[in-house]
Amino acid sequence: MSTSTNRLINRPILATIHTDAFRHNLSRIRELAPESKIWSVVKAKGYGHSLEAALKGLSSTDGFALLDIADAQWLRDHTWGGRILLLEGLFSREELELAVQLQCDLVVHSEKQLEWLESYQNHSGHPINLFLKLNSGMNRLGFKPNQYRTAFHRLHSAGYRLHHMTHFANADQVDRSPSVGQQMECFESAIEGLDAPSSLANSAAILWHRNALGDWVRPGIMLYGVSPTGVHADIVRSELQAVMQLRSQVIDIQELKKGDHVGYGGRYQAPENMRIGVIACGYADGYPRHAEDGTPVWVDGAGAQGDGLICPIVGQVSMDMLTVDLREAPNAKIGSTVELWGSEVPVDDVAQMSGTIGYELICALATRVPVLIK
Image (cartoon, rainbow, N blue to C red; front, top):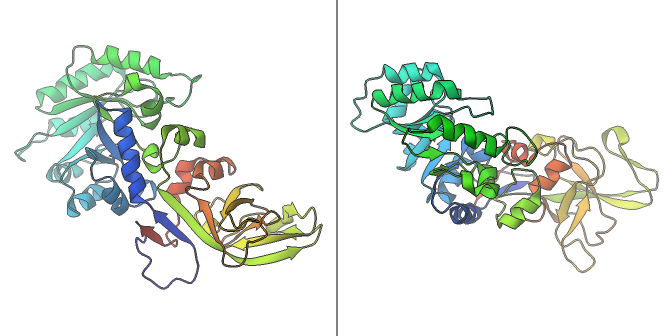
């Protein structure tokens, strides 16, 4: 991902990463979980926003949580001296020495990882923090309850500094099993008598399950101003802000007659004589190809009073372009600025109209899209 616009660009598309929104969202999380420390989750290169932007905007976090040890190395090389958590721990025994050199905290979720750590001789001069993961019902990673206590005692005997950890499967659902309550019962039973700090809550739990936070919370998607449920009203109620804004321009306007078809496959047929705007953004930029007719695009200055307004997509999104209905936008013209998602068009709304989730859209921003970090 480029983090600069200082190169030859002839297309008007631009993604802007607002680091002040990062700071605002982190502050809101501290208000929601005032007694917990915060792991800011920046896997997948900061959910498509770049590690550079995440480090700039989230520098007051208590720690960064990620997957790839190369990203941990990048943070250390760029002056981050705080804690780093490897969310899936080690992928090979060979990674352990580098993880220790980088002073990473490690999640431990498997017997193989446990064996590597038991045989490791720590000569670093500082303790190694481990987050032992309990499979409390999600059935993805972690030790089953009947294995957990033995794993804890083995690592404790090996001299590691231990924390308890689990992950909620349905913190954003009210009618799915296992519920947060069921997983908490499992967790509390498994750790009874094992004194150690805990890490429990993801974004959804921070928003809706304040009794299940733990000593360390792990916000991911909410840091980026995107909803865990895909419903933008959650973001409004929580007073979070969109961090990524994807903008482009109207590059052409077509005058259609009633009955004319638009785009590949002729999916949309003009119900009357109308104008459509052609926008420089397509699926090769990371915009969803499956966006339905009616997916919102905001066009600046397009309204009768010169105000910005939403114009719906009409026709199939193509590789480099998409088209919008300008019947209600008399002042839209070639060169008008548009927002594909950001503060005017929630990415969650685009995702809902495309049969996906906001997570996927922000992570899928194409490398050819220039990025400006503010």
